[in-house]
Every structure is written in C-alpha cells, then in structure tokens.
Amino acid sequence: MLTTIATGIVAYASTSIDCLILLTILFGIHGNSANRAIYLGDCLGTTVLLLISGLCAYPLRSLPQTTIMGVLGIFPILIGLKTAFTAPPAQDSPQLTKSRHRLSWTIATLIISTGADNISIYVPLLTQALSWQIVVLIITLFAMLTVFYWAAKCLAQLPYRHWLQRNGHYVTAVLYLFIGCSLLFRAYAP
Image (tube, rainbow, N blue to C red; front, side):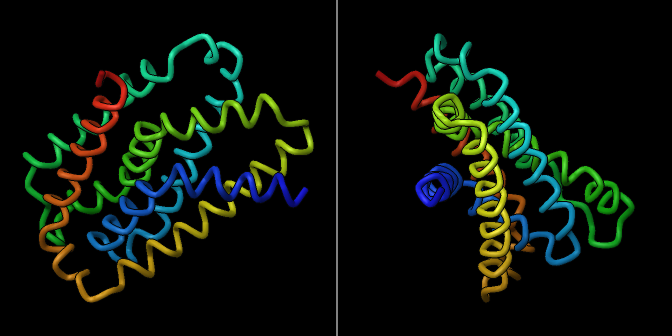
C-alpha cells in the first residue's frame, strides 16, 4: 500500500508542476475571493482527467501520445489568445462577478487541456493496478491536488502578488500560450 501511495505522489507531482504555477498565478490575480472557484475548477479538471484515463485506458494504448498532446495543445493557445486580447474587468464591475462564476469552468478546462501528460501517466497506472490500488491512487491524487492548492495559495501571498494583480492577465496569457506551444512542440517536433 505504501508503494501505491508513493507512486500516486510521484505521478501527481511529476505531471502537475504546470498546474502549481497556473494556480499560483490565479491566486495572485484573484486573491482569496476565488478560493472556492479555484479549488472546484482544479477538482473538476482532475476528475475529468481521471475519468478519461479510466474509461479509455485500453483504446488509448493504440493511439500515439503525441496525437493526444497535439490536440490538447490547441486549447491553452486559444485561451491564451483570448486572455491576451481581452482587457481585464474593473474590480467592481458586474463582469468580474460573472467571470468568477465561470472561473471554475475555465480552470477545469485548463487542467484538462494541459493534462496530456497526466493521461499518459494515469492510463498505465490504472491499467496495471488492482481495484483496491485504484482507490488508493485516486485518494492519493486528490490529496496531492489539495497539497498543491495550498502550496499555490501560499506562494501567491509572497510580495509579488500586487504586481500579479495588475499584470496577471498578461502573465496568464503568456503561460497559456507557452503551455499550448510546448504541447504542440513535444507532439510534432522531430
């Protein structure tokens, strides 16, 4: 059982560093007012990745991982372009309240779109594990998700948070574009 827990910790940590950076930036931009939305979006995205991995474990063996990464790389690029060319809403505008309601879905979409590496790790884990090991792995992955959530929240409290609040939409756009381009590069580079 300890081996299964250690495997889950390593699997999550190795595939979710980009998620930690993304969550840190989101906390820096939105502050504590978006705690619930950020956590919910992270949980939704991870749940979808686990469902995809669990439901498609055998069919995905026949598809090259590069195809999956290439297709998923398009989503962060589109979100990054939209973020770069859309002005951030004023602090008290109704659009900000509306955008916070969408924040969970946006984060879930980002987690899913940057999750090709997660899928490539989770599929072999889930196909090789016994039933009880799958339960332990899923509990461990969600425990690690919570640890990364709190780590991102703490990192966002460092002195640069005010800078992130002013310029965060540009940083976020660059991060999305970088993630999408790196997925496409890894998928189609010679």
